[in-house]
Length: 480
Ligand code: ADP
Ligand code: MG
Ligand code: ZN
Image 1 (tube, helix red, strand yellow):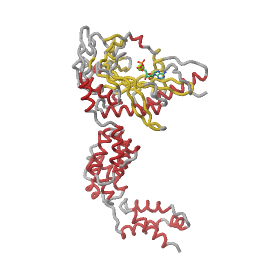
Image 2: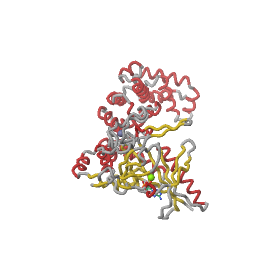
Image 3: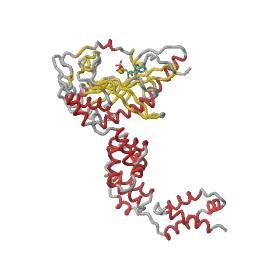
Image 4: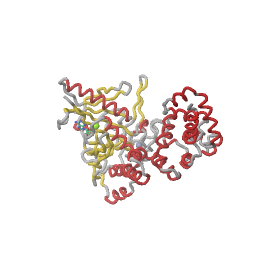
């Protein structure tokens, strides 16, 4: 019997406002700010304190709703979601329930089988909770985060694999960054994922009970948690058991989900309309003006990169997967006379490798795009070879400087001077008699190895084409 997974995602994203959702307290970095300094009677739930809506949060939420192709509702309602937890001082969270801000959107993701449309059920506004942490025998609570505007984006159960879930999560994160509504810093917890997972017999159209995995804070954890849950549920069904609806945590170190509590249903929260806030009524003109100010989004940018720069769809998508990366590429391409395809190769290859090696992100790069372009053009102009350029790029990324100056200082300029190359070729052939013999006996693939030896002997300065010709000539001369 075969089973297939059914997955729906809930994504919580803090909105990049200066102040909180219902009070004037400043929104601060939850890792570096001193705890419990940015709080007031409203966001700590003191009796009688009254919430006031943050207009900017609504604007950012509308921006997201529009970018996801949702219907934005002229009227939506805030509701109280009642539950008790130490990070929730009011004893309820102000959220939206049966009349959310936006519904019926979609997002395109790339899958092995091609582009797939994921339906989005709803986008609604709520407030974040405080932050609990535990050390030794103590628990600590920081209310700085309490009341920070939070957007919840919920899909239909349309995802079918951990990879699809990951593709959706990263495409959504990219859009939020493009829209400048969320920084996407997963380590800081400003964007968090919850996965709802069920499995069913392949071909069935019924939905089985789902489990919900809370607080997945990286793409990796998201995929691993779902993967584990699919295997666990499949195993239960295949031995005739039933899966209980449940809320789960995920232990990243063990790679396993664990039960937190029985899954609560909506009625457990005793939702009711928030009496301290009127219905949220949005003006059609205001929504329209937000729509006209939407930036170019990843899909549109990808299309433009394909047509303007003559890139393949997958090359273009790589560059547009991150707004900063796309910007950087455009700036390098604009100052370079080399083909955009070449610029892409440098960025997707050596540049990314350097970033990965040093653990830096594109935001940390201080290398001016103009200098990078200058370096790429030096290769195009055959002033330096590709290997030398790699050395210069690493130097530029680590210590800055001027590409031409570094080439000069390190003596990396390419030499096409025949006598210089001839000297190196002769030495390499003399030093490696057995390889010469093998080559002459028919193993012609060794030519590339000889080119490599000459490159090494000349510290990458020898023009590879001139080298190749000299090698072939030298080898032929040794045929007796
Ligand atoms: P709740 O607040 O109870 O978690 P939501 O409506 O916020 O409910 O989220 C439900 C999520 O679970 C949605 O993403 C939905 O697509 C998904 N979902 C619903 N039923 C199933 C199911 N049987 N299997 C997998 N996912 C499901
Ligand atoms: Mg849920
Ligand atoms: Zn406050």
